[in-house]
Picture 1 (cartoon, rainbow, N blue to C red):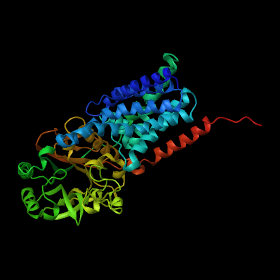
Picture 2 (cartoon, rainbow, N blue to C red):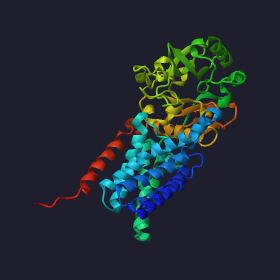
Picture 3 (cartoon, helix red, strand yellow):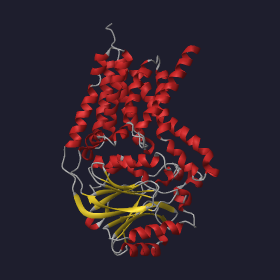
Picture 4 (cartoon, rainbow, N blue to C red):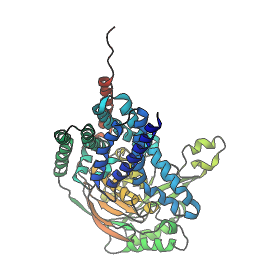
Length: 503
């Protein structure tokens, strides 16, 4: 590569990173979905200008790095809880997370350039390879689907398509809508071609209208759920001087009149482990006055520690326990820690009390007259495949979380947006209690019925909506979209393969 070619590539990568960062403005809390569409429209011209698969890979990686650096900027917040100890790690966390996730997009751009010919072929291939890359992000290495392109639609009627095709299908539709006019822009075939290239957008709009206007109406169950938000900032949450203040807030909110049918406290809501919590639970049950209470708590089983959720029945007895099974790598455990212990490296092993241990998997929690709930502790709400893995269909989804780790910028809003997506995908209401917010009752079409703003202490009583009939996505999961993409990739390879002349 000549010096001039290297400079052109560097400038192209810089422009791609900037465009990717602008595209992430479609994510919450900004929600500027046109910025995402525009950024994806500009991606094909950048990649078509590349002359080698390596240049395409670097350009796609730069675009993804800009997207994830902006969209996941909240990742620096946990390191600023104790800035004097961990603050120096914040920029490295952002750089490595954004750059690492962008490798999926760089690989997609490389494959589209390597295995397709011509601008049209490579743009079509890019829609397939980027969609497969998003599957990889969602499933490989325990998955991390945060900041997926489909999330930009959560405040629009387009989000209702999640009930039909799920997040991966909506991501594919988003790419088809945006990349097609990008190809027309790159080829410069005139206004007529550009207008025709917008046909996928028209199809998406019609489908979104049909999804949003169809289906049965949402009805109410008549049961009242109280969501409790103590607003304990992370740097004070375990401070002995503040623990009684936050606990008393939750007790007072629980005891308020009139008595609800169910009270939900957030993740790790009490300052003691379940093993030693009998007096604490008795006080909670007394304040609930016979109402069911669900709360997050830690528990020990030998050396192992679990991030758990329990149900207190009307008599104050522990009537159900759920252990979080989809843990945060490096946040709640160190991958392969137990394996490392076999070689004498005990510091990372969950079985030696270092980090949390994973529960057995999704399970339902019986809530008596309210039906059954699928518990989701914090991070678990970002994985639609975990919700689909429930042993039976629940009456509602129940998320408890400690979003204080995410700060007050974009993280809590993006987490809420993904919870709303899970409700739409399943056609189920979702009750969400967050330590510092945003606590909310979400209807089965993803609508926020009522909520407590970020950074406020308080509670809200909401009538629980009834579930809708099972959605198409709840019945099928991601398999139809994955099979479609694999078939498209195989057929595309056959079409694009060079023909050998007869000998």
